[in-house]
Image 1: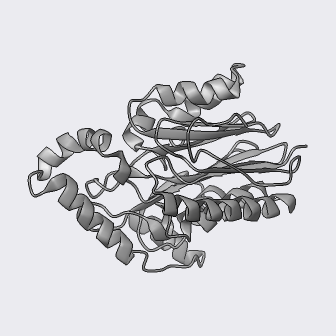
Image 2: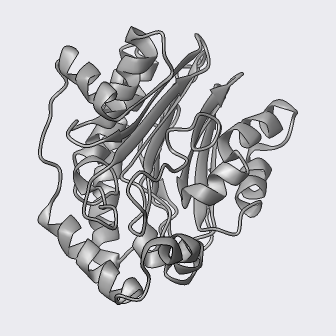
Image 3: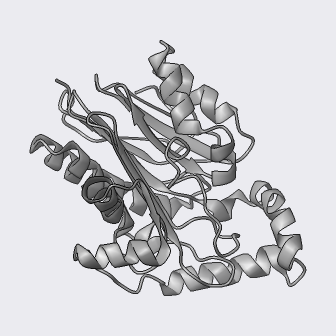
Amino acid sequence: MMKAIVVHGGAGRWSGEKLKKATAVLREAALVGFERLERGDVIGAVEEAVKVLEDSPYFNAGKGSVLSIDGTLEMDACIVADIPRKIGAVIGVRRVRNPISLARVVAEKTSHHIMYGEGAERLAGIFGLPEGDLITEEAVRKLKRTREKLLRGALEGVELLKKTAELIRKHPEVFVGTVGAVATDGRSVVAGTSTGGTSVKLPGRVGDTPIPGAGTWAENGCGASATGVGEGIIEVLMTKTLCDMVNRGEDLHVAVERVVGMTHYPAGVIALTREGRMAFYHNTDAMPVAFYSEEKKEVDVYGVQGKDPRA
């Protein structure tokens, strides 16, 4: 059985120095996840890898989450396993340090698949998940810059809602998204994704990450985690569509390129099969990806410049 894990840090426009630091954290996440994988805990491998990314300020998840346009923090996460089938997602949590851990609690400790807001926060308290004040000074500064650059006092209320898609396409640098991981022990495949949303969002907006089949999915030996602008990912149910393509016999590398090509929004996706085959694709400047397998026993990093090699 092939054990392998792949992690991503979000599709978008990355600065050189931040990308260098983020890549180091991605390497760590892949190694931490694989260590748990070797202990026989495939869902734990995804959880622990994503937690490393949530605890870093360099990604839009957990500690590094962007703020809604009114300055509030709303984080989403999802985890999906194919065998045995497990689905857990949380929406709009604000104080849970690691939303991916809460998504796992929903999947394994409740009879529900998706929980949101205050109810999800209470569940985190019941199971003793750590909390924290996750609004950072950098997030506040980033929101201020975004407001100044994109809004300038001209877009209010309904007009903002109408113009969001246009702004996203015009200024992709402010929409570096989502982190995620997919792991396999050669039998099961598990995918997990976590995000702080997008910078120009109205309070209460929900993206693709916590919607099973949109931002996160695993089925019949294939798992995927998407990143980018959620509205576009939702429209094509990117990860479910990708897994369906693979299960119909489509080449994995062809499938990732095809599903990203279905949307005109900035987006990217990683995919992994139970045989340990990995592929990814993005239509943005960069999408840092780290991959580790028991076959190669070293972390390979992709998606940081130019055309992506095939893994």
